[in-house]
View (cartoon, one colour):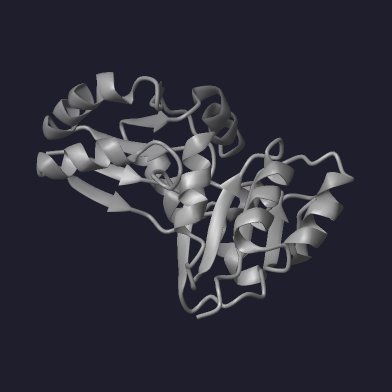
Length: 224
């Protein structure tokens, strides 16, 4: 029986990969990657010459049975995504679930995940929070926000720079323009930025900018 290693990769700064993750990537038979071109750049930086196989949301349903079969036959495989921990708003869940069903051993390494530093750095209560990831698009988005109106825990969302201002506007509508929010951009990178203020202030600030980079939004919960 082989083993599946779930390996977090840096969300920006390449120095954030752990020594253990590097060793695992060197030792496995091959690596499953969300974008093989992106992962190949990381491996080149780490001087790791290893076979990289594409594994993403468009092919995972077709390939998962074959991968589980390879694991049961003794292969060791590392699963990575473009950035952060596989399965957190990224591919990985389906393969992990199938491995569990087939009694394949899984080892998830600790490591980079964008929402953790954003949450800690937000200045908002973090003793109790909920992670919502990316909101649904179109009608599903409004339905989800209505469900969260009375959520009293600090909430964490991922968002693209292109939809940031629109999403903040939806937050103002459902949660109120005076709700406190922290918007974290380009975490661990050279232009890392955290904006803290009200939702209305965030809309004004980012509405006047050409926003780039990956976004994490942390917003305070409703008053109990």
